[in-house]
Length: 458
Image 1 (tube, one colour):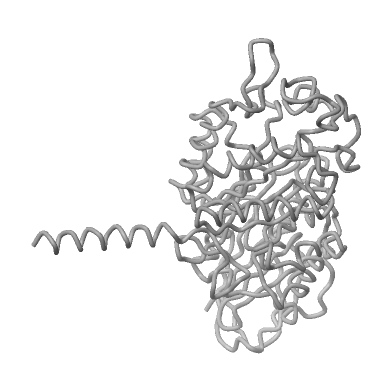
Image 2 (cartoon, rainbow, N blue to C red; image 1 turned 30 degrees about the vertical axis):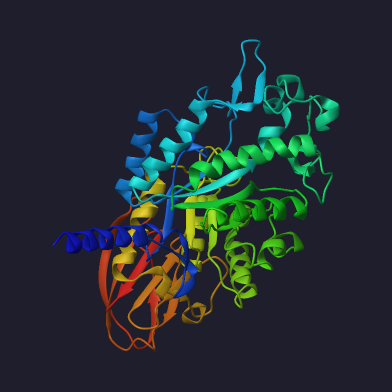
């Protein structure tokens, strides 16, 4: 009897371990999308900061609960320590003389990081980490940073090859911080500190299965930098019997450049691609560029993530209408993840972003996005940025109308009655329900000139 109980206990433990060993990874049945805990998952995000782990506990928990309640399950988390809100911490220990010891940690920084990972995993919210954010190491943020040689006891300007000021925009890539690796300038003193930081981060994050890794935020660095850190993260994980998914996010707004092919052309290294910078584009070009990427990597399909969707009134990267359009074009176009960027460059977790997430989750109740694909051929006399349409080629069609313009849709392959629900993107509410007869050309007009989703189903 004892032996039976023991075997049963072992079986339960083994089953639990097997379940826990199903981390976020490309879905085996459809590599364009993610699976988590062994099930396919669509990642949709709307959060109001890029480094939520820095938030005080109560503030963080309330934000994550708000996300969870509306169906958002994806956050961006730069390992950034820029003091934008006043409560951010540096990862290193500050001494009584005001300088930092880069060989010793600030425990509160890392406690916050682990608390963040615990709280997101509780809510099945997937985390995409960006290890290096170039803006931390330039301009006024660099003045007080522990890595600045004037602020630590570990190295001099000469030993680190670092200056005390870098006043230019980081796009110029003039900071030696991003040239430390062996195939670049091989700045061993600084590289060893960087390695310790990444190892410390991974010693915590590898305990969790809901984490994706991106090396940089919109980097202009050399390819050797990206390859080095991607291989470093993968190797560190492999030594601990973990398989992780890594990528790089390039700064170039044109996805068709050689810069982006550094990830597109290397599926053996990069398990997914982040194409967020496409969100600097607008209208039909935005859609076409993304579809070009899908075609370009179609021989080795991988999840395409968009961890930051730009666009908000008052921001510098497009207005609110741009933000809504970009998010929906990517969702309908076949992304594995879509997240609204934080204010003021994006809509964050707001009424409009919440409405969008809720609508997408409502669509999923009729058909999963991985069963839908772009069907431009259904649009008669298609005009740029008038409508975008996807279908399962069976009994569900989803159309995004950015400005409520008239459209003609070919329903000859749908010879049956269909319901159409007009969903107002500004509110997330269904404003009209009609029934139409398929099998012919349908002339369709949205309720008004706002942004709409038209959901067709049998």
